[in-house]
Amino acid sequence: MRDRVRPDGRALWGLDMDIKKVRAGRRYYLPAAIVVGLMTQIPFLITIVYSTLRWNLARPDLPIEFRGLQNYIHFLAMPNFPQLSIFYRVLWQTVVMTGTALAVCTVLGFLLSLLLDNDVPGVNVARTLILGPFFVMATAAGVVWRATIFSSRFGWYGVIAANFGLPRIDFLSAYPMTVIIALFVWQWLPFFVLVTLGGLQGLPDDVMDSARIDGCNWFQTTFLIKRPLVQNHLNVAIMLGLVFIIKEFAIIITTTGGGPGTRSYNLPFLVYRQVFSASNVGRAAAVAVLTVILTLLLVNVLYSTIKKRRTMYG
Image 1: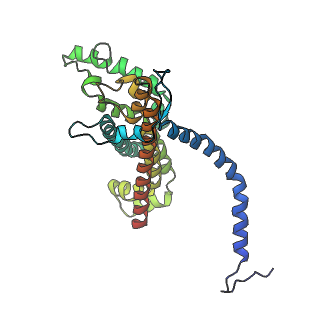
Image 2: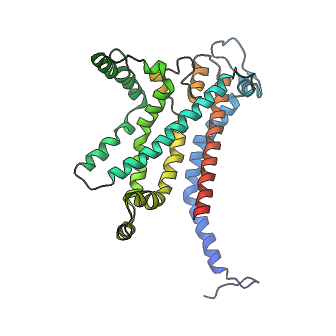
Image 3: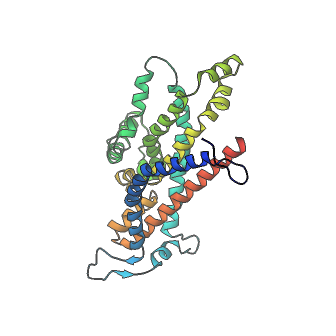
């Protein structure tokens, strides 16, 4: 069949076929997109509506009133330094905890993946065991770490300190953010290992053989060949890990309870406190919306950085 030709001489037959394929593909992904949109965007829109209301659950006698942006102004209004509002302190703590845990998980995940990417006796058992924390419920993990490990009287640390004459330090009170970061890393490190190990397992053998023949040492093979080849896997792990870690809540409530004071709060925990302690639905919804906006901004910045690096280095 003779192709149709545009005035500039380009054939239209292939273009028509591509358009038909795109239209046929929409029949398959459109229902899924509609379902995902309904399940995610409608609750978010309802949260935005709640964030504009004055709604105190502890005072059912008070009417639910429209307050516009007053709930946002309450948190975002910059106070006089050094008395920062609780929102800015919690925001900073969220960034520190999330960023530190993300960086540690990325580095340790890559290094552990290198160790597990070897055919040695027992490697399959090690791969299975290292994934264990990923499948433990966060609430159960928090209770176990608080009661049986970090407890200065009855936990492992307390017993070891008593037997060796070490000072009994209440880590949950003295170093709350450090404890939370360590537990975040413990819980999400297996995810980074799983994704990175999948990338290492998929590296072509001919590339590794060429590196060996060319006389590359371990450092050159690892950081100049393997790491760039699994960079896409690392990028996926970092972006998903950012979303997973920034919304963590159960470990905080079951270990430090946000304390002492507000020293181990993050934004999701602040939402919880606004609802169940202050009984203020409007302010809790406002913090939730700000948390979503912050997460989207961080994901977009991270994605733009990755895309720019990919463009620069090909």
